[in-house]
Amino acid sequence: MSNRIGLLDLEKHFAFYGAYHSNPINIIIHTLFVWPNVFATLLFLYSTPPILDHSQLGFLKSLTFDGVLRLDISFTLTVTYAVFYICLDKKSGVLAALLCFSCWIGSSFLAARLGHSLTLKVGVASQLLCWTGQFLGHGLFEKRAPALLDNLLQAFLMGPFFVLLEVLQSVFGYEPYPGFKARVDSKIESGIKEWREKKKQQQMKKKVT
Image (cartoon, rainbow, N blue to C red):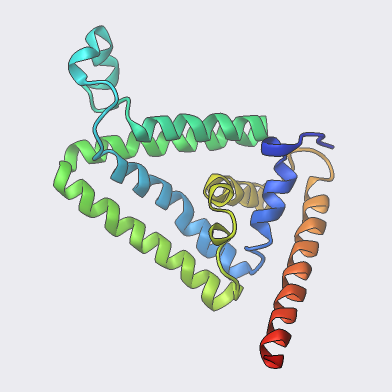
């Protein structure tokens, strides 16, 4: 059992995000679109100026494949997400970190090949596709607004990790520690119940007014 609190409380994060993703079809949709959206976001961010200019790399230039892999916003985000996921859970966190860096490396090489203008277009178009799919999943199947409307930072941080952990749980029966799934499922059920009661009260108020 984990005794972590605050930002590193995996149960709390997972239960929060899970309460907005309880419908099986919506979960499948997010499984298909969340990580591609990470890739598309990093692809789009490659268009931003690097923090360190290529000419300043010196002997490190060869390690970055002649500046294709850059120290920029996308790299900073990748490291932030990777470290955060490892802190949440070492085993699945390492896998999530590898996926983050794979997306960063892949998007960097693709962006370098496409060029600035086309990278922007492909990045924006890909994000629109991914976000549209996820919003449709919420509107048509979950019947609940996305988590990002209630807690933007928590939703963006947990989205990719939630999807990965869901797959690991469903396919391999993985748990960060014994009892994790049962405790989280209980919290998710309570969160959904609380949301439904709140929604019901709001509907009753509307009828009265």
